[in-house]
Length: 86
Ligand SMILES: [Zn+2]
Image (cartoon, rainbow, N blue to C red):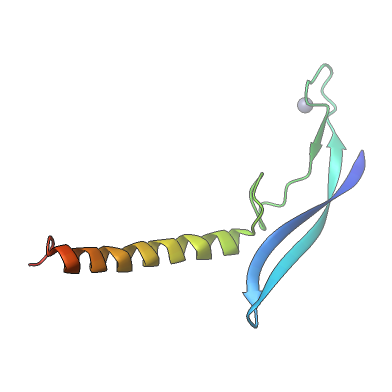
C-alpha cells in the first residue's frame, strides 16, 4: 500500500438531482522488480471502468438514451423523406 486517492463519478440521478459518488481507492506499489509502472490505483470494477467519469449504470443509461434518440430522429427522417415507407 502506497497512499489513498479519491475518485469521483457521476451516478444515476435520484429524485431529479445529479448524484456524485466519491470513492477512496488505494494506490498500490507493484512488487515486481524493474516494473516501469511501480504504483497503480486500485480499480472498482463493480462501479466503473478504468478511466471512466461515470458509474457503469449511468453509462448504460446514457447509451440507452442515445439509442432511443437516434431511433426517434430516424423515424422523423424517414417520415419526412419517405425513404422507408413500406
Ligand atoms: Zn508492475
